Length: 145
Ligand SMILES: Nc1ncnc2c1ncn2[C@@H]1O[C@H](COP(=O)(O)OP(=O)(O)O)[C@@H](O)[C@H]1O
Ligand SMILES: [Mg+2]
Image 1 (cartoon, rainbow, N blue to C red):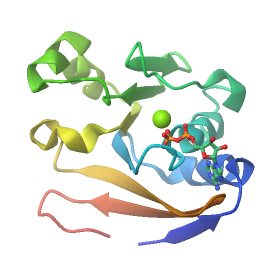
Image 2: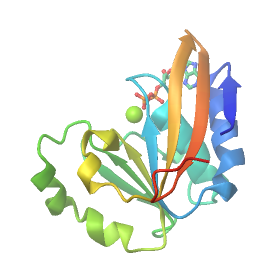
Image 3: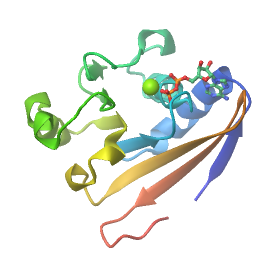
Image 4: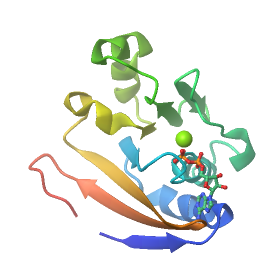
């Protein structure tokens, strides 16, 4: 499981762009506290996939879902979602049926809704501007590589 360190938001964007081509389609959970850099990393991933420029990617805090690159990338933030059943109204299932990279912040709040095969990117705040970022490819048997 690769672990990376970044020392600025620009470095996190650059890392996201570098990781993007190796991310499988499907759910990519961005896991970390408020301010850990989840949205910042999403900017890099969307730009690395050619779906949007980093400045075009903003936090989907209120609309919950943003779509970039004509359905190539979805960016979802479930922070404000209170109940699992509200997810149905978002059309998440339909999105997961598409051949898209689906970036989700706070998706780990709803573990039952997560596909067994998914990518998890864990972000930890090490110091004010330093982040540790770890990529885990989770397989249906519960394995991680
Ligand atoms: N190395 C870093 N990587 C990402 N963000 C950083 C880093 N250092 C400082 N920051 C700051 O931390 C904040 C991260 O915000 P954001 O990406 O919205 O976090 P989240 O979506 O996890 O709540 C921004 O204000 C950003 O400028
Ligand atoms: Mg965010």
